[in-house]
Length: 403
Image 1 (cartoon, rainbow, N blue to C red):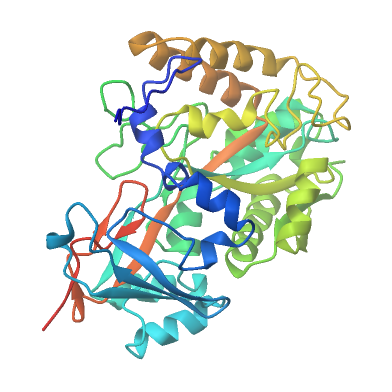
Image 2 (cartoon, rainbow, N blue to C red):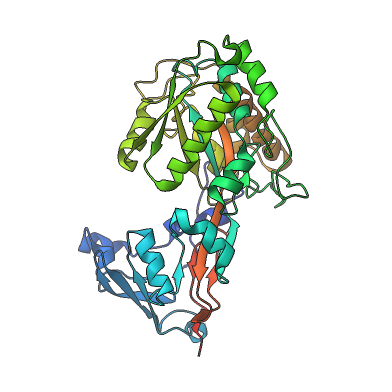
């Protein structure tokens, strides 16, 4: 029997090996899924798998039990007899379970306790997450339809203060949009960090402090010297403690550095996503993690034909956003560079991504705030050799209980 699986790619995709390593590409047994129908993945008899563990029990809302798979190709190397994955919706409750010794590994920590955990827990893991966190401007709504206003706000934000005093979780201030975890063709980073671990100042963005003088000059150029006559604007966000603290910090910075008033609006997560998609906002934070580490996975958000282009930054119409009828010429250069990159290889491809970022940063439909951190806990008093993938997922194929 022929066991070769052949894939024919439409475009040049040098990151394809990274892509198929992502868990969404894991194989499933088609005939079993089709026969079992909806819910097949929750039933041990139909959740057929080929990994080091298989599903033994699934209690919805409670837990999943996994048992060592004797048919796994490297079964002799698997030390754990099984794993219990506990489903805990509230991060504070989950952390309490970790502290009580009921949970050994967790990567959803309560945001308000992360600074203390990072400072005190000997088994905390802090590393770079993929992607970037940013501030969206709705470029079709006044006053953010004015480029100088967008530049003023972008420059007036103190990114170092956000990461070191608000987040305190190992995140790094951003100057450009392509994250340090994004790799060029040769495996090097698109954004080389300087001696202090921060990126260089680029595009008028100083990652170490607000560029107040330049920000005030841009606001004056927009017709609002010292913020005079500037309308009160709204910053919408998904209702969480972390987002609340972030947006309150931005609100204060813009009032202090630009003399403009910002009103905050918190929404439930599902409502907030709809708000952004429909363009029913003026400013809103956003974020994206990209796995694999190719620049396309992050910067694709701002292509005119991408449904996640919530800045409404499009030079031509997109059928998935019938409400977005105001066109933005600055997006055309981005689209052209993006399309060039996806059709190229090697250095030409790398250079095209830099072109795309330049177009994005010069028209400022969005401003990068910080490159997020990955924070997790692994209680090494109880378990060792827990491995972590480049995409920050845990693997237990070599883990074992500490005797």
